[in-house]
Amino acid sequence: MSPFIAELTGTMLLILLGAGVCANVCLHKTKGNGAGWMVITTAWALGVFVGVTVAGPYSGAHLNPAVSVGLAIGGEFPWRNVCPYIIAQMTGALLGAFLVWFVYKDHFDATEDAAAKLGVFATGAAISNPAVNFAAEAVGTFVLIFVVFHITGGEITGYDGNHTLPVGLGSVGAIPVAFTVWAIGLSLGGPTGYAINPARDLAPRIMHAILPIKGKGSSHWEYAWIPVLAPIAGAVIAALLHCSLK
Image (cartoon, rainbow, N blue to C red; front, side, top):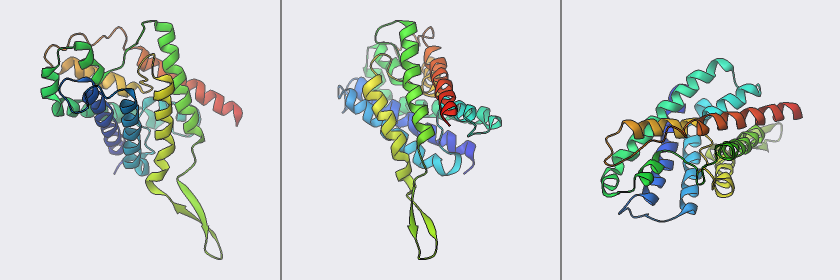
């Protein structure tokens, strides 16, 4: 699998499972309607685990433009690959959002609340205060990127009598970043719904705007700049701090 296809596929799976749990919890007549924040944050974390497991061996599983930018600033990812990765991530997020709409179409039709429909695709402020909302997204992303810089490879070492050998742990290496996203959602997700990923919010918001969703209301583009720019700001700060501590 090429790195481009890996990023596309991994991000598609992330959004399929992440936006999918939002649909299950928020839309009318689903089996999970009203299940709550713990279910949402847990499924997003597991969506990260699934996406990283699939994409990790081929692309490093960024699945997030803020990760790609942060690692490039930190000198751990070539700048020439940033734009191709972001294109793959956006494309995957568009596909994931489309699949969520397709799977839950009957429930979108059965739901009258336009805000609930938008909430499946995109984040929004619980209390509108652009400066604080921006800071919340930046701080959450800072935590994610700073931890990513400190995650080691998914391996332990063994000894064959002559040499120390790495013993791969495969998908177990995806657990630290999944736990980090889970912690961010539980602790810092309240003000804005913790996009912490420009592709996670922008691409599904675009899909919300173009899909024929009955009674969907506004896509609230006046807010959309925050979950795009704030995660990048948080990633830049995390990368610069990491570089200063080397």
